[in-house]
Length: 166
Image 1 (cartoon, rainbow, N blue to C red):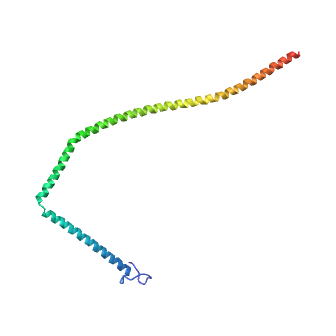
Image 2: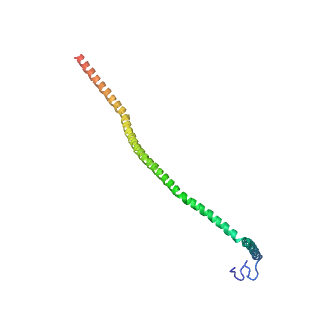
Image 3: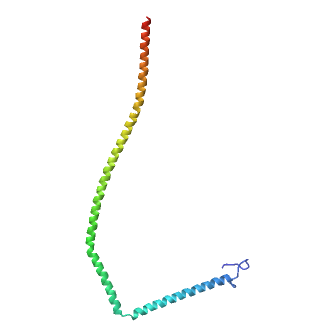
């Protein structure tokens, strides 16, 4: 505890506090529990070892041989089936490649078609705007025509009036 002699609230190293004693006691108890767990594990392993040393060695070898033979048979079956699995996977890849090509071509065609439709829509919008402007232009032309007709009618009327007066 890096304490200085004479500091307030500090305890000298010769007289451990009750708190330190409790911590040491808890640490001792923890170590005792860990030691007991280690002893229990050792006893269990000794029991397993005694069981296997009592068991007939041939039985164990026969069992292990049987297990290895089963694993070998499974590996050989898997190896025999592997060329067929590879062939099926290759066939599936070819099929998926064809489908992918079809969808790529279809997508390309649809993109071209979409672009054409968008172009047509833009052209129709322009035409529509022009058609919307035409009634306005026709209305203006109609107004100008009416004005000209009124002016012409007025001139004819004025000319007729003058002739009547002469």
